[in-house]
Length: 163
Image (cartoon, rainbow, N blue to C red; front, side):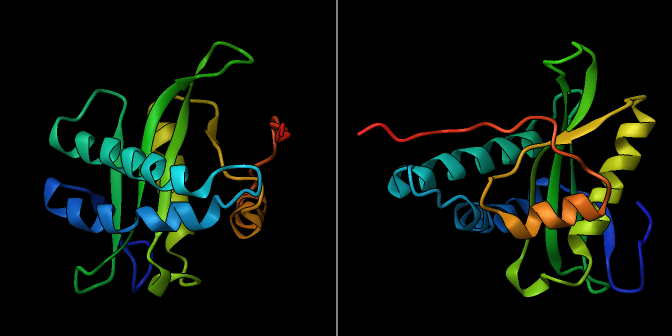
């Protein structure tokens, strides 16, 4: 993949990147601290989700892609895992951003934006008309970025804790 600017480069992730990807699982847990969920059970969920991404590096499935963002020296900055999903609204296949994480040290440097643009290129190349993602409702920073880049809310899941 081509360089997106002078400091961020994108490439296909490899199994050699598994350690970096595994290190980012707490970033997901940080953004998903919903008051009605047990935080202790969210960590293992996030770890399992990241392990599924690592599995894609070991044995890639058709319709999946993991892209790594690095600086010019090759230091990893973030990753995105893309796959195909069927829209529950239209039953058409569409691109889906399964996971996106940026190292805390690289926040605000355009890494997430570069990864999202790469995801859009991947989805277009695959012939999809839509690219979808999910994010936690309390992740206001990410939601603002997605809105600025043209993503709109298609559905909102509401949850109530029953005591």
